[in-house]
Structures are given as C-alpha cells and as structure tokens.
Length: 53
Image 1 (cartoon, rainbow, N blue to C red):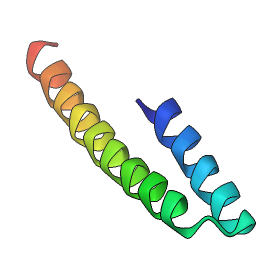
Image 2: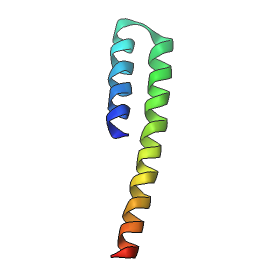
Image 3: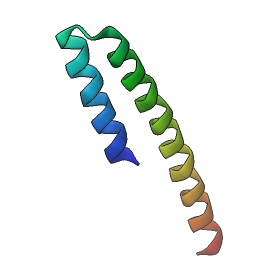
C-alpha cells in the first residue's frame, strides 16, 4: 500500500513539474487517501499484534 502511495506521489510531482495541474491534483489526492488507509491498517495491525502476543 505504501508502495502505491509513493508511485502516485511521484506521478503527481512529475505531472506538476510538466504543467499538468489536473492530473497532478488527482494523483496527489489518490496518494493522500492511500496513505491514510495505510496508516489506519498499520495501526490496526499494531494493536492486534499486541493483543495476541
């Protein structure tokens, strides 16, 4: 999940540099959503791992 977040972040940066504002905005929005999902799943796995240890 973090891998895809970084890919969309790179796409957003490259699109922004090349002047494609709409694509950069969409890619950065997707990257933000994926990062939040990654954080939530990471915290859930940490909590679940401590509960069963």
